[in-house]
Image (cartoon, rainbow, N blue to C red; front, side, top):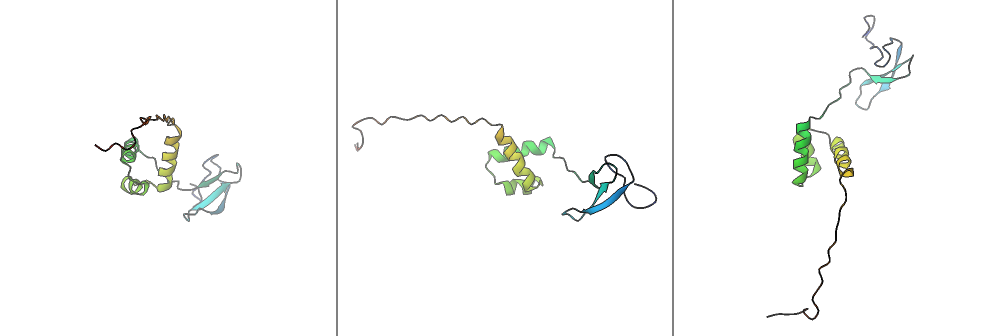
Length: 112
C-alpha cells in the first residue's frame, strides 16, 4: 500500500502504477496494473476448506444427506460443494455388472 494515497500496489509486479477497474459482484473495487495488465482485488478473501471438513462432507454424502443440508452444516458454499462432488465423482470408476437371474421354466404360478 502506498503512503501517498489509499491505492494498493499491484499484487503481481508490485508496481504503484494502477488504475481502478470497476468492482466485483460483491461490490469490492477491482484494480488493474498498468505495467503488467493484471487485474486484482485489494483485500482478497480466499477461504481454504480444511481436510477435516472434506472428510466430514464425504461421510455426510455417504448418508445421502442433500447438498443444501451439507453446505449449511459445514458452512461451505453450495457452488463449492457441487464442484467438489463433481470432481470426486469423476475419479470413481463406473463398474456395473448386471447379473440376470434365470426364471425356472414351468414355475410361474406356484401357490402352495
